[in-house]
Length: 191
Image 1 (tube, one colour):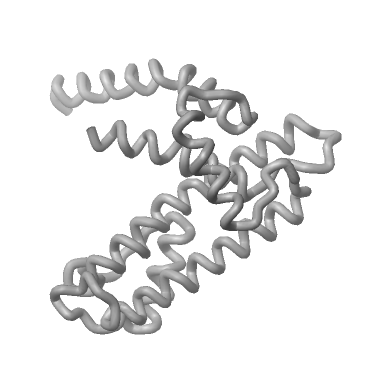
Image 2 (cartoon, helix red, strand yellow; image 1 turned 90 degrees about the vertical axis):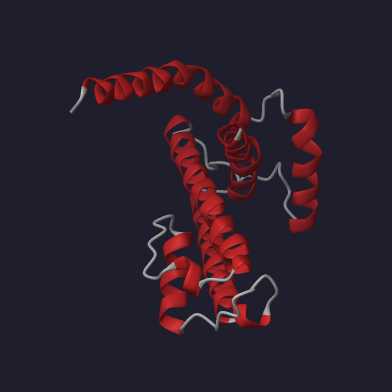
């Protein structure tokens, strides 16, 4: 490796080290329900999402309810992405008039994106329409990462609350991971 390559690795390592504690403290505040600087903008959005989804943000779940919610969310994600892929020829934002994605490939791709492996056994530009990539795959890239964060938070709560019967709400953790963690990170990275 060259000196420049080692320098890049060192700078990257130092940057990660520099943001670890402030970002960790921010995430603790987010998942503990404490006030953050994004609350004025994101709390109304969060409340609207709970109202739309029929979620009571104060009701916590035990591990079985939490796991069931996560599995239902994952199954709905697989079915939704598969449907978008199979019906893409009927939807707008398909300027190349791509046909429906074959069933096995649609199922494989949907499971891959919902489980955050993002394995692609196709050439994207010749298989997936713009809408499929945008509304199916990109959305699942976000939501699968939020699901992983939510599960990590639940495991931490389970360890920290050894005697408690609940570990939080999957729906609250998923929403907070998306709105307070992933969207701001994406905006910062995009800029």
